[in-house]
Length: 176
Image (cartoon, rainbow, N blue to C red; front, side):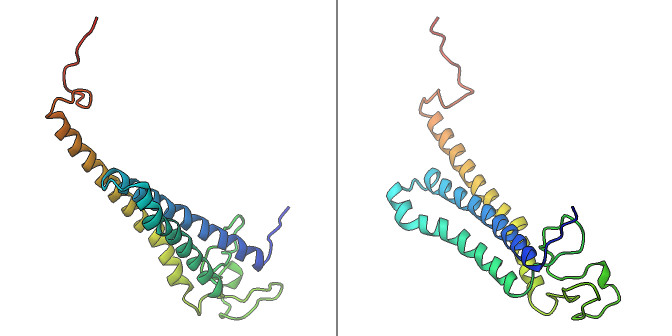
């Protein structure tokens, strides 16, 4: 029952975790930008299909795969040695590596201690987390705020011209 896998399964798990998390986060940004184009900028479907849609799909796919393959190339998918890990730790330094120099393989193990330390995998790892936890929420929050402000202003303008159905504070006629 204590199946641990090997470095290949760790690479596959780490790659799918990073690419999946990044792609879903960046696609949420794309959906918000799409909504902003329709709500605030009143863009037509033909414009969106020709000018925007390639970027709305391409940017999340290219960025996610680029980060995923960069981590793979720099040996950035490593287990931290605990059970149930997702193999996204950029440097391999589990408990059995304490007191062992980087590059050495402890008896009974196959992966060298400190794997991933020599490359830029930690920088790439932090770039991924910046996009996930700073860049995406800021983009989503800003686009939602822009849509809210636009709709709120539009509703106020229409309310001045007798559009009582859009003005919830206006008295409603009773036809009974």
